[in-house]
Length: 111
Image 1 (tube, rainbow, N blue to C red):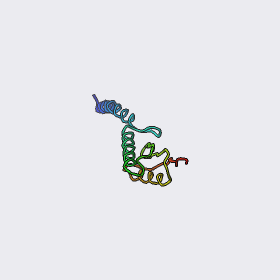
Image 2: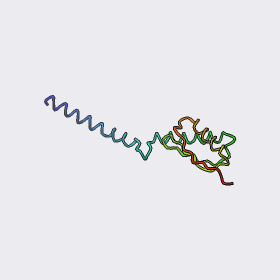
Image 3: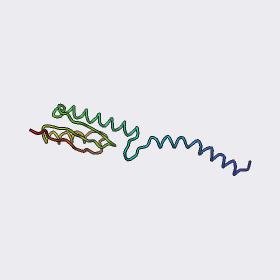
Image 4: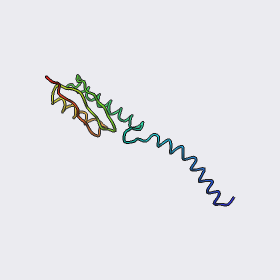
């Protein structure tokens, strides 16, 4: 077999072996509207750390605050008793490792 045919056969074999690997990694990557498995796990861990930090704070532990995380951006939502609690919840959340930004949708309960 001539040398150029041997090289062509080797390139075709290499391409055939690489195709499944490329398809697998493409299936695990994130898109603008979805998260990869690694990002989801990281966001879940951030959410858990934020909830634990809020519960550890004596002025915030009795509140019903919802915490959601997407790509490191944390959304706090719910009702609290005062503006001071909102500021404290945002500050506590910002101090948690992995938090990239905090979106505050907390509201003071109507009196």
